[in-house]
Every structure is written in C-alpha cells, then in structure tokens.
Image (cartoon, rainbow, N blue to C red; front, top):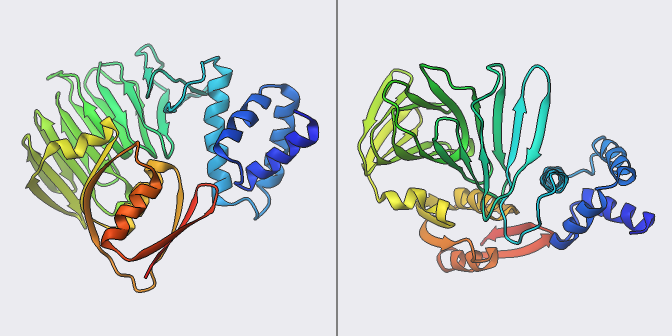
Length: 326
C-alpha cells in the first residue's frame, strides 16, 4: 500500500467510514513499525479533536483486537469472535487476544501472583468462553467484562458487568461469588445466567441447576432451578421461567420477553455492533417478545419490529442506523 493510500485509510478509519473488509487491509498494514508509528501519531492527534466521534473511539478498540490477534500469529478465520484479556499487576500490563474456533477461549492459569487482577472483556458484536483456574466455565455476552484476582483457599470471587452464563465447578469448601454493582450471588457449584447491564435498570439471575443465594443490601433470596430473580429499584421478585431462554444467547439465539423498544435497541447494538439513534418524540414504549438467531441480519430484525411498531429506519453511515418511531 502506498503511503498516501495508507494515510487516507487511516483518516477514514478515525471518521468511522471504513467498510468491514477494509479493517483487514488496515490491520495487515499496521504490522510494520513505520505504519504503526504513523498510526500512533495520528491517533494522538485525533484524540485531541472533537471530530473523533464515539464510533471512531469504538473502532479504535475494535482494531486493537485485530492487531493483537495478528501479533500473536493466529490464523484468520471467518465469523470468529474476539476476546480481550488484560492482566494487570504492579510490574506490567499485558494485552493480547486469543481466538480458537467460533468463540474466543482462554485457559487462565492458577499460577499467578496474588497481586494480579485479570480482566476479560468482550466488545459489542462478540462473545467468548473463559475457563477459570478452578475449572469453572464462563460465557461472556457482548459488551461484557469479568474481573477477578487469584482465587484464595476460602473464596472464589469474580466481578461482572454485562451478561454471563456460569457453569461453576463444585467445591463445597470454597464458595463462588459473582459480584455486580447491586448484588452478590453466592454458589458452591451450579449453572446459572446473570444479566447485569447497568443501562437496563435491573439485574436478572436465572438458575438452571443447583442453588444460588442472591444478596442485595439487607435482602436475601435463595433460587431454585427454573426460577429467575429480578432486582429492580432495590426490590427483588422471583418468578418461574423457561430457563432455556436466559441462556439461549450462548448458542447464538436471542430470546426476549416483554422488553421495551429502548432496551431492544440497546441489545441490538450489542449483538450486531452497530450504533442506533432512536428518535421517539412521543416517548411511546411498546413491549416486545420474540426470538431471532445470529445469522439473521439487523435489517431482517428491524423489519420484524415494523410489524409491531410503526417505524422508519435508514443506514446513515458505516454501522450507524437511524430509527424513527412514527
């Protein structure tokens, strides 16, 4: 790639104007030190400018995953999912990506210094599976983060933002605790799903197998298999549910029931890695229930929404969509 062509693609990248296939081209050219140096200088200048949109900032994170993958010498695969692992200690910060198969998988070693904090993040449009040192398996949904330090002999604790599906390795002597910003979920060994996106205004814990104890403030509830607990406005409510709906996203299916349009839009942003500008002047909310699979396009999903709500939509830019409620 000629220097001017490379500079043009970098400029369009920061303006959020690259097509999906151009990310591969840009990533390949960022493997040389000369181009990386130019890109780093351009990034520093763009970060000072108001023209760097939110889309541009998100694209910077998206590109970093691809650069890390290339640097690790991992093969290119179609329709793969990315994973960002960050291990922070007093000595260093290590950032790298690992891809295996259709989802990202990382085996976390238990031979870590106790001062290390391990951060596992998945961006929008991605999901990943992480295997913890005790054998616990965790699937992270899009736009989610899992944080933990080395497990002790008396406690296994992780912190979650977003959504995750847990298969906790049984150890009756060492409890496993999932912390969110509103509640703690304590288990010994079980299978459950936790939805803890801050922007949705509630937390949902759905139990498939075993038993969990959910604690928030001075409230505490024990769930049985087939039950879901919703924590909203500091109040807990338990209902019987179809547990397969809560974990369907692990198999690339999205089941939703009675969620408002505003939440559905946010879920679509996470699922498809798009930015949706919702124009709803009347503030009218319609609740939606349904199922779709990951192979369905965002346009097919929006067409289905039009059956229930009178909306117009248009693509305004790369991965940007405008929706207007009539």
